[in-house]
Image (tube, rainbow, N blue to C red):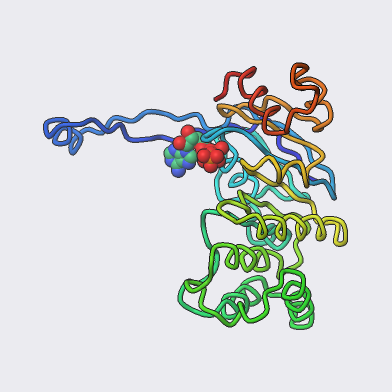
Length: 271
Ligand SMILES: Nc1ncnc2c1ncn2[C@@H]1O[C@H](COP(=O)(O)OP(=O)(O)OP(=O)(O)O)[C@@H](O)[C@H]1O
């Protein structure tokens, strides 16, 4: 369903130096450095999988999600998702995916949530019956109630995140990219979001790629982990194998997933 082969991506960043003289010089001649965000990344994901995409800050997780969702064009490599190249066949491709960036909103800030939902229905050209059915189901399962009639700016973070997730699923996508969907949520909201993710995966067979720094998300949802560090894919496998490899014998074999990940980051020297 998803094949990513040898993807690399660098960003050109303007060098910033301090001092008036340097700032003046930069007006005429800018100097740039290259940041290698992704270096030869390859993996494949089967339909119905939930894959946890983890790694420390700046590792390249969001950049990968942006490439896979067609927002960024890589410098090298190929990506085939449901037969589409995301950045080439964008209009048709986005009908098949939902994307949630925990740090950004796809909802219109000043109007009631339902207005953004209606706009998304029009953008994705969702048939009215399908839209109403999805809206009802999402409102019930994400407990949206009156929230959909409230302007987004009046919602708490947890309430907004539930609305964001609903917004990403109104057009019945087969693949859902979730970039830190539980960031900043309280324990109750986190559990609600996790339960919902698990439910749409089991009941609707939605394939899910989840980036998170919360290892409890990973433990609750993902049977497979992709670990990225400094733009390079370092591990692709299940949590059980990681546990066996990184379990701390001195801690009576009961290391938490957080301890295991910290040990793994240390071994790969990516912290
Ligand atoms: N638009 C951009 N311009 C310049 N550099 C960028 C840009 N986007 C990302 N980068 C750089 O690419 C690298 C990977 O960033 P990315 O956002 O993919 O990391 P991440 O794993 O999602 O990190 P985090 O967990 O902190 O969100 C970082 O060094 C970052 O500074």
